[in-house]
Image 1 (tube, protein in one colour):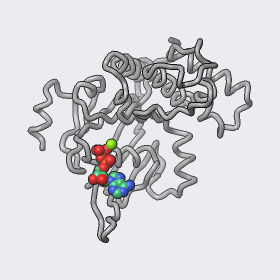
Image 2 (image 1 turned 135 degrees about the vertical axis):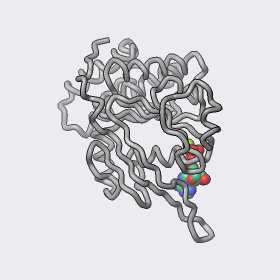
Image 3 (image 1 turned 120 degrees about the horizontal axis):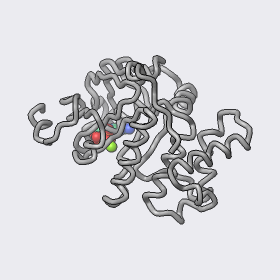
Image 4 (image 1 turned 45 degrees about the horizontal axis):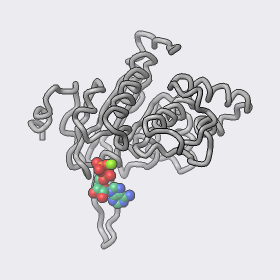
Length: 251
Ligand code: ADP
Ligand code: MG
């Protein structure tokens, strides 16, 4: 792989800055349910962070806010120094396209489009000429080891390969940040480990910042920092402990 090391001081660049983020959803019978309470943390360029917590603890809600898919009820959120807490739908879409590459549990590939077309997708709104888009998408496919599969349909690939296509697509837009929501949730453990090793390599060799949601402690071991959320509150934020029981102590 052709990869460049980030400059020494790159770790001091703030990618994510969340300050007292709260999120409530209206309830059908009236009133509201508060799902996030005063979530405060920063992520610097080059970090690989896991957000862990049991089902229903607010991980996806938090991820939707980080990914500019949703806005908080209160609090401030800056992505790469840009205040995104109060943007409208179109502005949020622009921020997503410019800064973030998404990797989802279910891959979210277009099943009737070729592998190459899928990887070219985030480049559609960049105003690049067609040949430049194709060139860049091919480069990304090479990076994930799938250059021989560009004409295939996603349905012809294994789960692990599909997730590699999704990672190539995420990388094509040259994002500041990769957000992965349970990226190995639909894969067997061998393929899952390959994908995690690959994400770790992207982080180490290219300095790509990664925030990954998982409910599995073993998966969090691939990252350098763990944020544990329980009932909408951060109960642990620090190095990834070797023993999961450390997290229980902080509840
Ligand atoms: P996790 O990803 O940790 O499993 P979620 O963030 O998906 O948790 O959900 C946390 C809580 O917020 C749950 O009780 C869920 O029902 C509620 N919730 C999530 N999204 C919505 C929504 N769009 N409308 C109403 N309630 C929601
Ligand atoms: Mg979730």
